[in-house]
Image (cartoon, rainbow over all chains, first blue to last red; front, side, top):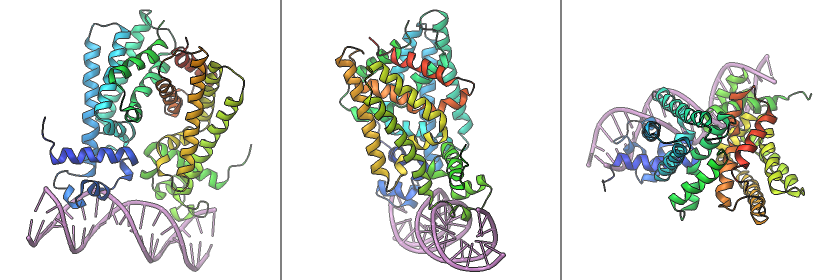
Length: 189
Length: 189
DNA sequence: GTCTATATTTTGATAGAC
DNA sequence: GTCTATCAAAATATAGAC
């Protein structure tokens, strides 16, 4: 198990605070207090508050991008790809509950990395949409508006971070399977 | 058509800004600029920034509570009640897209009204859960974890505000029907 | 109803001692 | 790596003139 660096510790604690109050409402003094040090000391490890947000969001966004690329490249059918997407969200969300809050709610506060983030996000959505369209074309899933399907499924998956911590006892495979059943059967012909 | 008061105008413009950047990141100067006046002038109409947030969130939360109470009191079956809930969310969300963002993302910044908001919210979720449990008991919907069902449906409905403005051309009845098909068929036995 | 001027706090961040 | 001291900017809000 790799030893956590001081910067990583700061980013982890910051993500937790960002989840509770949002990036803008958390001050460097709040973060310092949570770390048990003074605000000025934080700057020995991070460049700026923005630097923390960037670290949290970009690494997560890239994880999703890589996961989606692997799913896209596979030869599976539409339903299996959707199940893989569900597993991807459950896995990443459960491993970084706090970071997921920033990814979902504070991306608009990114500065130089905003364009890059938005590109990753829209690429992801385009891949998702094309999986659904392929499934409709092949008759695998019902032919209702694919944008509404995507909205419904993706919104649920993106909000997992809110809900997973309330059910710490739940098995992650069980959760993936239950979500598959609920989300997929709604669009499975 | 009732004439909009200056306070109502301020609240409406504020909600739009809050949706874009979140409550904490919007300053009274930002709001004043969007209104075409100076920040000090805002205080002739509103008590504080907090007063604006409270006005936006509490009225919306009470609208949902009233809607849910009517649905609960009706004699309809589970599926029909769920369809009524979907219509309720589509209706309120489409009428107040900007306010819905604050309701979803900035409720934790409420001060004296926080407890009241949280009570309304948990009552709403309890009503929702009991509708699902009744549907399971009567055999109307499938017997998978009701908490996951609720999470999936409610998360989608709560996020409608993000997505509705992108589809201005869409008919709201069509949207309700499409959502019903996608969300309900997934849990319809 | 809006303005200018201003009070008071809080903010992100830096300098330099230890 | 952390501290104290401090800066400069930005924040909410008030007072009083017009």
